Every structure is written in C-alpha cells, then in structure tokens.
Length: 78
Image 1 (tube, one colour):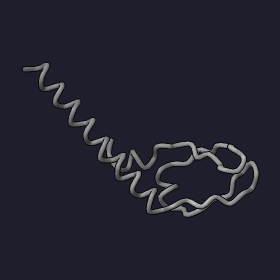
Image 2 (cartoon, helix red, strand yellow; image 1 turned 135 degrees about the vertical axis):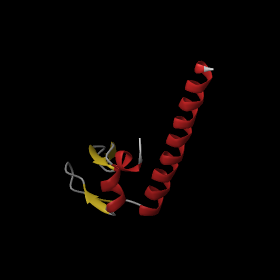
Image 3 (cartoon, helix red, strand yellow; image 1 turned 45 degrees about the horizontal axis):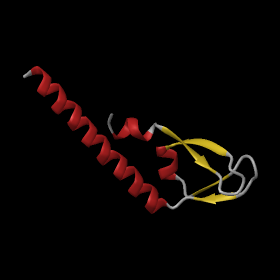
Image 4 (tube, one colour; image 1 turned 45 degrees about the vertical axis):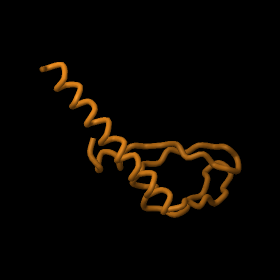
C-alpha cells in the first residue's frame, strides 16, 4: 500500500457531542480543519497537526509491516 492508497482509506470520526459517526477518507481529513456533524449539526474542529502526525505514524507502521512480510517471505524461501 502506498501513500495514495492510504489517503483513500476511510475511518470513522465520532462526534464528541452526540456520538454519531461519519466515514471520511484520510485525504479528506488532511484537507479539512472542521466539519459539521450531520446528526446534531455541531461544528467539529480537526487538529490538522495531530492529523498529519497520525497519518505519518500510520505510514511508518505500514512500512514496518511491509518489511516484516518481505523478511518472512525471504525466510521461507531460503
């Protein structure tokens, strides 16, 4: 999975006011600072710095998993 594919993954965002959930892609979350909850109409502010840090961490962990899979594949071939 590359960065573009990761950007298209959806995650659920839970409204802190009503508990309603809405699915948004990582790309959408990175590009938006706030949204209105469709259930209770409360404005929800997204911390863009924290979002970027979370996405960077996910990308790092994904690379680690890809390396582990490759190492495993090489170990069973040898």
